[in-house]
Image (cartoon, rainbow, N blue to C red):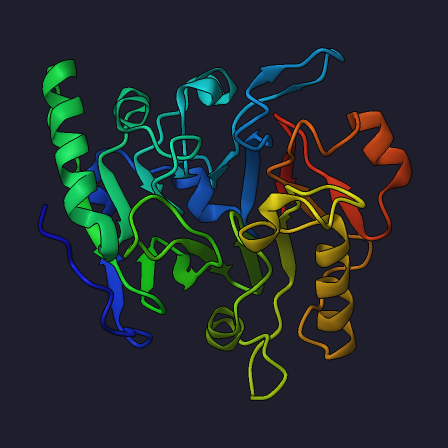
Length: 296
């Protein structure tokens, strides 16, 4: 299969989405100050349902401003708010615990954004899923590192992640979300924040930049599991804590007073229960849970 190679940095390009072409716009989201996030799932690939302890986590995905998904699988279908009809999805990468074309189409997605490095693969997958469901395929837009995409009053910037899939040339992504005075970095799946992501987002203290005001970061590896094999492509609680400390010391993370840093994408075998996490996570970290809604 012909593959597009990742060749360029499009940090200054701006793509505007015409919501009229997507059907009825979510006007409440546009009017709402800040960025609204609903955690549809907070589990890693090994935590897809209720475990032996009775703890329930679905595969990681979020709903932004009531109509924009970042990743989505069938496990999160029951977490969509009643009456919601997501029309846009951004994918971080092609792993099946984040990517399921059939689930996206059933949810109502009309536009898909993903790294241009696996656009050809996704196009085939979505065409196949649409045919099986007797639906029109969505418009799939390849995106580039640093490209700014304007969706109503929300700006979405793809950033490089430190992660890998079965496709050797795929560039996985994390995202910077901006609206008004809110700058939210959504970082999963990734082993820390890559240097280029820090530079583009403005949190690299070596250069001028704007601080982020909110952070959602994966902590797949839990606490005290630094020797786990997922070290190279995922983050631990300790790494998230160090990241936050450095960003605060360099004044590149300036959240509202009392706002937590939310961790997500939690591995079942490496994390305790929600009650354990609530009791023992260091400040300002908080474990997100399925159904949690936060206005940043």
